[in-house]
Image (cartoon, rainbow, N blue to C red; front, top):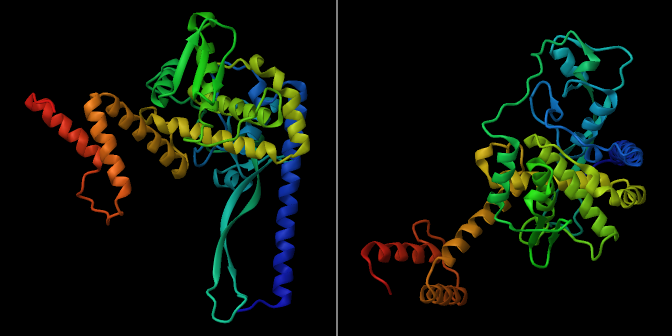
Length: 385
């Protein structure tokens, strides 16, 4: 059914209004972080101790994500809110209370999927095309400290069966990243060699300082084409280099604060001017950086499910991390083969690539699994090929 010109005009007006609100939100967020960067008090610039909790919804208990999380944490710090929980106006009422008169909320945003149907195909009889799009939906929330008479439990600090240092070590091991520790004064990730280089542990003031630095470089490590595939800069100080550094530092904040690690921002002060310039040139860059940092966090937490921190991570990121983990296992098994066995596997794989694809059979073992199974059988019988 074709829409009338009046209906189309109303839809266009609503779309324009949504975009105007979104652009206003983007500019407000960018201006806030530019101001905080200039003052040295952006969330990822602040040194923190391990005892604090990230912003979460008071009703659902879920942590906020990406730019919403960073914005709310900045508001918690700048306004001195002692509680990390937040509510919408209606949620405050559902909890038996209300927002105090005169309190100003914090603008946040979520994305809603909707389908667009092309109901005017060029040719008669052509199939109607349905496209999926995302639209930004602004909303306002308030800290529970801005409310009164809320029927909620006292604030509780999350309890885990691991210490921050133990959890950080688990993430490093689960990643399978190649890490070298050398007696030097700098830490970096080499994308060509896919290698993280760190100063020796004894050079750091304490264990938390070592893992804080290691997690930052692990954030860069996820940019590799086999993982999250982000763009690296060509040299220190260029635009892409600064953008990648911003993502790694925000992700380090997200990961470290979730684990409860202390943070030292002094190592990354050299990038502040580049970050400010990037946000002034394109205010949306802060939202993209926060979204990428959230993906980094999701990816890393998906690598070790024993920490039980992967809740809320996207299925796409979890799938990439799972594939990465399975690949590492396969490579480890392959390296344990003798040279003769490796040659057999390589030859078999080459032959399978040249054969036409057959229909999938859930009962058919993969070529690599068959080689592993045969090796186990030979080991059990004491036979060698």
